[in-house]
Image (cartoon, rainbow, N blue to C red; front, side, top):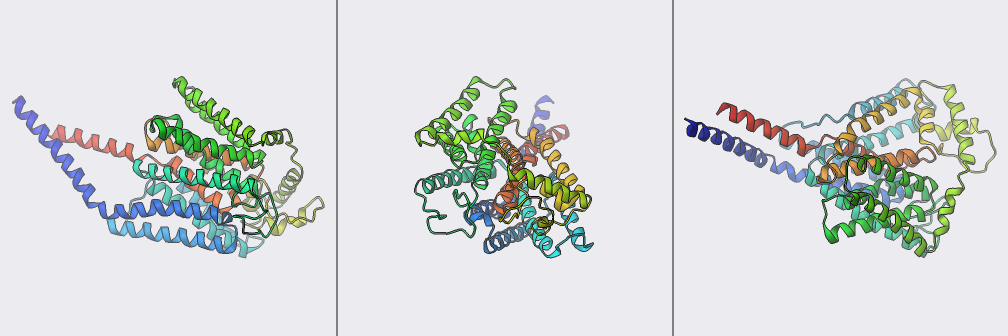
Length: 450
């Protein structure tokens, strides 16, 4: 009887495994579309960065058209699989309610300039699409590995280009393009702070991978050197907010990892990266950029923030309408300048002005859910690609959120799109983990039946 029971139990296990293999074969055609979506998302994010941050009309349209194309491909994938597969991502609900708030501003005529609010609503839809694609299609470990490697390769090449352009600068982007407005050019951005904001989100990916056990030998050293190069250009760009944001990311990484009985190798690796960044700055003769940290006077930015709060007090609930700050601000400006103030230089103050307490509350809800669900998903960062990418995404989001207190990175489409993708990756439930739990449950059920 024992032998017979063992055979029946074994038969049940084999039968369950065969059903899993059969399920894989059924979804294989739609798997091609999934890889198209993963690579398409990477290409769209890279295009937005290279197209001057997607701030010009043509590049903004191209970005929105690319996002719409990705959504159509994703919808086609659902039709091919004949089943709507939508994960329970905790960020969907606050993002959906925020879109509802924008529509309410338009329909109820709460916007001071409804045309620009409609324009910003279309842009917000494109952000929602990349959040959806990132959360739904970059969940498997293999997909996250490809996404991470593509972003590392792009980040390292882009940082090298930005450094080369800085050393041989002729005042033009890509050495040929003269921007409409003059600024502190770095990389493909007119504003060096926006370049630093991009790198704050990208550099945690190679940094986390170089500290874990997913790569060995030369591959780990190569990825670590990419992290040093990318982080070094944050300091070379001269962005004080970027420097402080990167330091905060390192502190958060230490708090999340070193306090959990990690090996001393992680601490030594973190120190080595910091030393190499300092050595790179000294080698390039740019040690004086560290002196910018001593000049932290807020200047005109603090005045703009104070004026923004006065604007908020006039419409505290609904706000003036998404995207309307440049239109309304001149009536509330308290200082003289011949410059056009088109952003608040503080994303939180601008959100208060444009969407009021309703929008600000939804933003806080979004961030609370991001960290509540993002922190647990990053615990397996040393040995699993999904956990490593989740931790890197959370670090990148933290850096840009801190930088947003003194700048307007999230008003730049390229940086905002990458931010929402990282949020989706950080808060997503790991598909590999849920699949293992489901399979083990099926095996146990098969054994009990046997």
